[in-house]
Image (cartoon, rainbow, N blue to C red):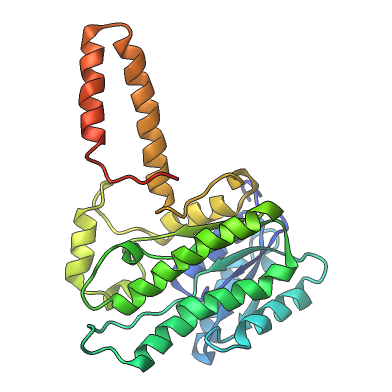
Length: 294
């Protein structure tokens, strides 16, 4: 079964009947979590059943549940939490992944107030209400993981509603991390680029290709497993000091890697004149990178 780093922890993963959410459910179950699969419409019920069947081989996989709850409504989040507590009355809730989301592709001149409401009711209000509903039952050390998007920090024509909603999730993440950290909880935001799911075909291919070309590693689409591994790590105890709200985990790792390399160059400079020249070149190149601090 592998390392049960989430052994016995209850994890609610919203929007987990397909795509990234499904991958998260499988990986969390593989690590020993008791998973709650949420979905919105009756048409997704069979997909949710398929996810549960994928979890059955893992330690607590057969105890996983599915919950139909429309997180756009005021009642949906509390319904999801109530179903979770009924299924796991003695366990509380340790992990919440706010993954459910939607998008509307319209330019400013075309977008309507109804479009804004459609996106924000789920991506923004739904995220807040879901987290509020979980909070009284969150077991220490709790883990809240918000699934954002690179769109929160990039300007793509036709995606202003979606991108701004994901920027709002980043704002939530920073503030909630500051509020809940004193209780031992962590709040993080993961901002994927294009991910190889069925939803990728709803995005303008020109945008997808441009992002692939700007991806340093292999210039490829992300896989669901790429995202699942990061989120599962953030849900574990060993992530207790990680804060990824400034951009995403990969940027933090890049910054720390650069720090280590710079330290090695500094040691080299103490030994040879060539090393000192290498440090100067490294610092000059490093200054060209747009890497933000914690």
